[in-house]
Length: 427
Image (cartoon, rainbow, N blue to C red; front, side, top):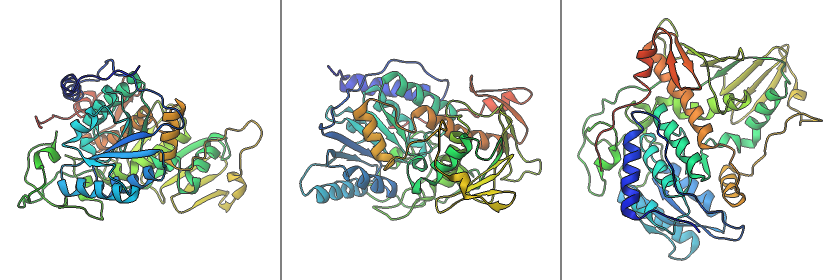
């Protein structure tokens, strides 16, 4: 029989864990989630209803056995729009606005939560959901810091819930990335030597001017753990909107556009190298202070580079694969070689072809197996982005231990100081 903590116990324990993750990884026991049968209805709550939340909402509602019954957002108008869209789609009053994300997770009728907040608000609700025995679909990048990510991954594993990180390139986009990772794993381009990843730059400090705070937005709750500052619509748009807000560029809330798309493309690099539970050994930032060109060196001899001609380029001893959301191409000696991307044969490894990332998450809940991008995997991918940001900030070569998740060598103290960030006391 499923057990759930009382509302008071849940809030206290969630707050305690959330306060710890900025200091050191935490070990704890969580509630266990039940495994529903194939015909059971799953009740989902959405935390954060911006553009991405709206997109994912539609994906969940494509499954008639999924019901979205609650939406929480610091902007009342966005939460109300989420409720309206769900009820219109279902042609019934099945969804309501939650008082806040804590109340949503504490609701015993919730089976799973979708977290589509800004990056600095991923950890607390994800950890709380694990403590409450809820399954979690969390947008990428999974965490803001390496310390957060480790605690989130430990929480998901200990609780026994199904956790899907939103790195949907493993499941979607015509399976181009699946085919690329599969070909690399199967040695179709020989020994892998180098991977280049074409994504944006690391974050900058937020210097936006203060604007008048409108009614209906809980600004303190939007800021959360981040330092107090004045409201600005570039960070939190007023009402429902149709664009991706610019908070991604700023250090206080994200890890720049390096992490925004890097959480997708570095994810594919890690996947192709079978590094879902590990990472690099060295970070070498550019000596001229440039904001691209940082290199990661792996124990297997592969060099992973921030910067490149397309989303993902895999260079091997016998060929090259270029891959993006819109194309995939293989070359040998500079000439196109489509046979490199042929379907696996014989004993070659074949990776899953999911119909969608959400469908894989739902199937994992019902089937009791891990989805394609678990919390541990999401943490390791986010760590690559976070390590790059740390490397650019320190500006010196760093040694990294992917087992202890600590720096070593000459500049270890400088690196370790950036594994977490101060947490502002907040509602």
